[in-house]
Each structure stands twice: as C-alpha cells, then as structure tokens.
Image (cartoon, rainbow over all chains, first blue to last red; front, side, top):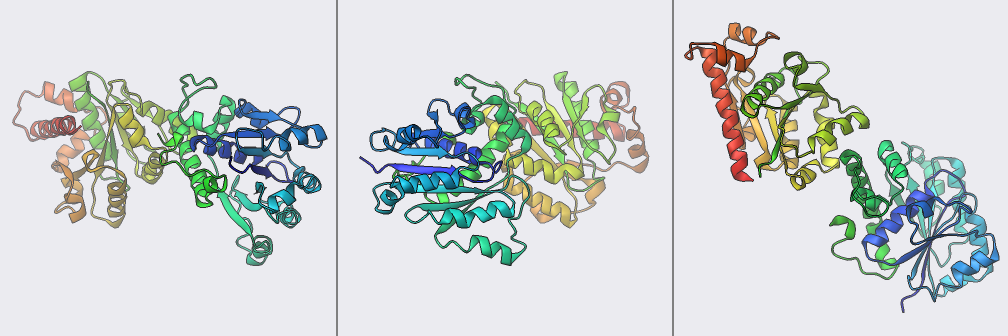
Length: 251
Length: 221
C-alpha cells in the first residue's frame, strides 16, 4: 500500500484564496486519477464542501474527535491523499497540534508524506507568517504560494523586502497562482461546481449546462496555468502517482 | 451539413478599408443566403452600423461582459453567417482573448468556421499583426486582403505567401459615391441597367471573389 499523503492548504490571513487553491488541487488530482479525500475546516459551513461535496467532510480541527477522524484514518482510508483546507487563522495552531500529536515526527521519519501549501496574500502581514510557519516545516514539503488575486508584485520591486521573506526559508518552493478573470470566478461561484466541471460545461449532477463560452475559456486557460505549476513541482510524484499521459480535463 | 462561417475582418491599422470589406461581404451574404448578422466593433472609425443598420449590431471587447456578448454569439452553429468589422483598436485584445479562450478549437468542435480576413498594409504594425496571426491561425482560415487603394503596389513578401483576395481600386469619384451612407452594392447591381460600368464590374468581381472564397472553404474542410 502506498504511503499516506497529507496536504495542508492554509494561511493565517483570510481572503487570500486558500479554498480556491484547494479546489484546484482536488481538480488536479481528479484529472490525474488520484483518489483523494478532503477536509474542510470552515466548520460548521464549508466552502470547499459546496464545490466538492462527494469527497469533502467538514471538520473542526480544534476538537480531538475531529483530529482523530482525520489522522487516525490515514492508513485505513482507501484514498491515500488527504487534502485539508485550513481556515483563516488556524494554520499555525493546526501545525502546532500536528507537532503535539507526533504527526510531524512521523513525516520526518518518512512514514507519511506531508506537504503544506502556504497561501500568501499581498501584504506584509501575510509574508510575516512565513517565518512562523517555517518552524514546523522540517520533514514537510513547504510550498509558498503567491496568489495573484490582484496585481500585487509581492514586493519584488523592493529586492531587500522580497529577499527577506522569500529567500529566508531554504527548502521552500515558490508557486504562482495567476489571477482569474473576475466574472469567470463569479460565474463558477454561482454555479457551485468544480472548475473542471465548469470547463466541461456540466452542472452539479453532470447534466449539460449553459455557461458562457468566454468564461469557460478563461477558466480553462487559468486552470491550465495553475496545473502547469503543479506539474512543475511534480505533485503527482509527490503523492506517489505517475502522471497520466492524458488527463481527464484535457480530453 | 455545411458549417456556419464567421468572417472576421481585421487590421491593426485604421482606414485600410475594413468597413468597406465588411459592407461588401455582408451585402453579398445577405443576397446569397437571405440572412446575415454583422457586428460592428468600432469606436473611432467609419461605422458599419451606419451603413447596414438592419443587419448590424454593435459589440465591444473592452471588458469581459462585452466579450461574452460577442463571442457567445459567434460560437453558435445556427447556419447564419456572421461578419465582424473589427476596429484597429480592438485587434490585439480580440486575438489575445480568442487565443486564451480557445476560440478556434471550440469553433471546430461546434461546426463553426472562422475565417480571418486580414486587410494588408505595408507598415510595420501591419507586418507584426500579420505575423501574430500566422502563429495563431491555421493557413486555411487566414486570408490576406490586398486592397489596391491602400497597398498601391506589391504586397510585403510575408503577406503574399498565403491565401489572397484582391480588391481593385476605384477612381476617387466612385469611391466618394460608394461611401455615401445610403449606397447599397446589391441595390446598385439590381438597379443599374448598364452592366459594363466600372462600378458594376467592380462589385461583381468582388462578389465573385467572395463566392470563390466560400467554395475554397467548403472544399478544404
């Protein structure tokens, strides 16, 4: 049996696109035929659950019972990949909990593959989180995700500031999520379907939908760019699945 | 079953004869098929809407909403030929967007046949625009318009290699005559008894050129 994989997507700052990135990950794994389960920590009502209801469970990560639900089932669960969308403000406490229960040690000794997608917003407060999160990252794959939700430059124009954040953590890998056209984003929101279904012009129950061709085109183009970033970091290799030659979404 | 053609008349330069081409082609399609839908994507040039108000709608590609209004109509296989008079200011944005949203691929899937009619000129902006189209548009769907009134001589080599459609120059007094807002090429053909007039022959030659263009498209696809 393959090694369990846990991917945590989070940030301490809100509104930086954590759930959006989680959704692209679930779409990516689905297109690459990687069985995945997801946990949405926006208890009691989760956004991720709305888009991927079949594979998502809402949990409260601050309770022991829900922590058990996630981590005690890692070896038993048939999908070996678990994606956890950690709600705003909970990333550092969640990582501290993982350390306390010995999860991070298990990752360090190679029993579990553990990756953190740390979503950064365009503010110093967001960048300040990097150092804090990095303390927990030994044994984990740490991805710093620059989410271009607006035309931010992530202080690249100020090399000193940029280096102080992005070059301080040695083993972090940077990822770029380009900006998605606003209307396209809103249309997917209204439709409550995964990006992949939206591109395929399908509704919630796989019925034929009638989304704008232009908006579908923008989403397809954007999703392809996001996925090429996932390809670049060899995400399928990380989760122990060879990349399939033809992805579901490319058919 | 035949495809639904979408003719996109374009150039990154103003005043090269795009609207004239759009008028001619729209009137030809209306005469041949009994129906046509034309889109005027112009802000700063003579407007197709003023010439053919009954069959022309305005459109823009400035924002996403405008793009949706236009492109979601163009992608429908409804058997009605479409003509787009694409203003020079919208050239880059239109083709950037169409590349990004995969317009040509989706069109092929939906039995819609876009034909890009690039109105040539000899300047560098036109050369760059043509080069961009060569990279984006398959040769069978790209036609260069050699408007003698604009080019006045040899076409640039790069533009003369692909498919060409030549439009002869008219003498200035006839040019002024056809530029009148109430002038109709088809009405002129119907009402002018003398078929040997220069304008009569010019219109017929251009209509014949469009017919050949259509036939070539049907044979190639």
